[in-house]
Image (cartoon, rainbow, N blue to C red; front, side, top):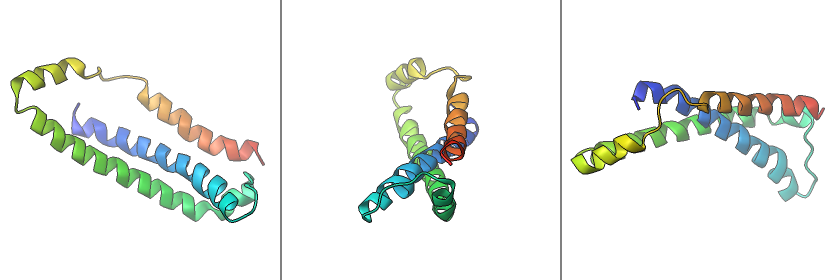
Length: 117
């Protein structure tokens, strides 16, 4: 797959990763580890909003780092023609449901706090 095509997909999946860890970490585990119960309310989410921005940036950086490492690994694999032929058969076609999946995941990250308010 082309790197130009992978970049927006990786950024979107990185943001999903960041939102997921924001819910798991900042809104769920940290309050429990500090001795209180977790509350998924608008007030709690608003108090943790700077943490959400940090988690999103961390997710994007993780995704871009993964793309860089994956690209380097793929270039090394393509040196052998047998492995290159096997990798060409293994790759999925472009135009899959991945963008719709991350859109739904990000939408849930916005809708869930509103519904729990």
